[in-house]
Amino acid sequence: MTDYNKILFEKSGEVATVTFNNPKLCNAMDGEMLIELIDVCHRLEWDADTRFAIFTGAAKGFMAGVDLKSEAMSRKGDPISARLKQRQGQELMKRMCGLEQITVAAVSGSCLGAGIALAIACDLRIASQDAVWGLPNAGLGYFFSWASTPLLVGLVGPAKAKELVLTCDRISSDEALSIGLVNKVVPLEQLMDVTYHMVDRMAANGPLAVRMAKKIANAAAASYFGDISVCEPELVERLYLSTEPVEGTNAFFEKRKPRFRHRQ
Image 1 (tube, one colour):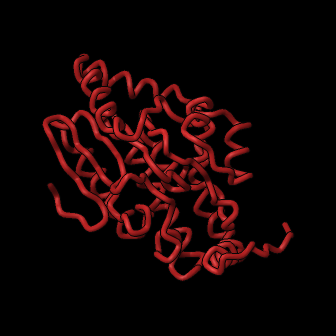
Image 2 (cartoon, one colour; image 1 turned 60 degrees about the vertical axis):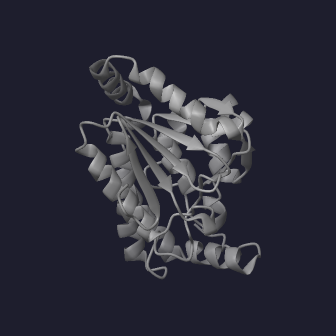
């Protein structure tokens, strides 16, 4: 096991398991976890012995978004910092999507915001029946960023993606399955067993064929056409100049509805 503060990283044979480990905040991502996840992806990029990587959360929860008290999104609401943090988030997503290993998200409990981003960056998603999925971003004055919106559209289609992003509604794993967001739904107590069983099934196939099949499928995906992620850091900086993320975050902590100024 490699020592990290906000994640656990273990290897067993050809399988690596990455566990988000911030249980006091339902594994919400802070700046430290973001950096550690980028580091672990960099390790996997150069690990020819590991063929599969499982991403999951500690204490029966996946990830309840970003820790709004941390600097994962910006440094004290500073627009320039927000733009640079956006690039860091994009780096994590691109590294996860580009891994040669087959990646599987084993999702239980809360899977919100950044949790959905990391889940859809994986090749496959297995969810427990208790998992809850949602994108609260717009209600906090953000859009669904980190180059994640094209991935979401590719999985569930434009109409459903817009509904999830614009309404901030939360959905069950059964609904997530019905719209194509997840591959399989299982009882909570079977989640990891089913995940490892699926990995075993894939591991029995030709290693080169499996690796090439992933790359071909990724290259054919619509989410890789017309990549707009280069624009997102500038758009996030513009959001912070509007003060909407600051008002959304303040409202969250003050347990009130945000008072956004309705202007373009």
